[in-house]
Length: 195
Image (cartoon, rainbow, N blue to C red; front, side):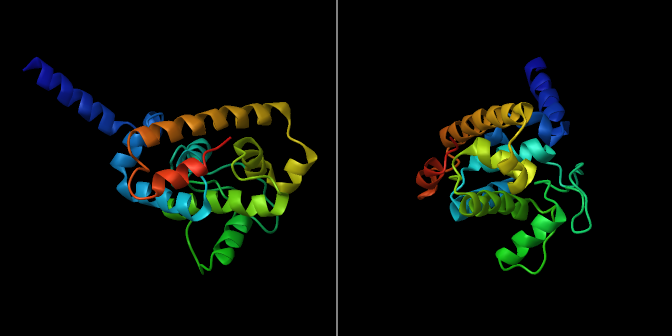
């Protein structure tokens, strides 16, 4: 009886935790949010960017908070970074136009997952850096194309390297729990695994 009460209490405790408190277990996060799981699968297949990469970027940028606000660059043509992917408005609007959308909120998870994949793919075309090179692409994501070309400070490169390891870890765990195992998802995800 005590064991049942203990397990019930643990379940209530875990259910009450904010999403970002459990992001080391992406399998559990995807199981709790099937709409998010489908969005990540779709973005991964569309852009050939691994699920672990997409989830790592969103986790780092917003801790999976839809209305997260960042301190990104502000000028006449952009607004502060916002939403799951912490996109600035100028880049977000470029993404919407480029993907044929007329509108879409930065607080929409599916669009944010798509944005991350689109960003890695678009910057591969613009810079020649393969999208599988997580460190370089995360630096481009954070610093912009121009900032990346000028060179990243050591602490930014160190963070990007840590996140690259985390993305690989998430990809392995997601594969182990069968996240990409139905159909051809697994092959696509492994092809797009971060370096």
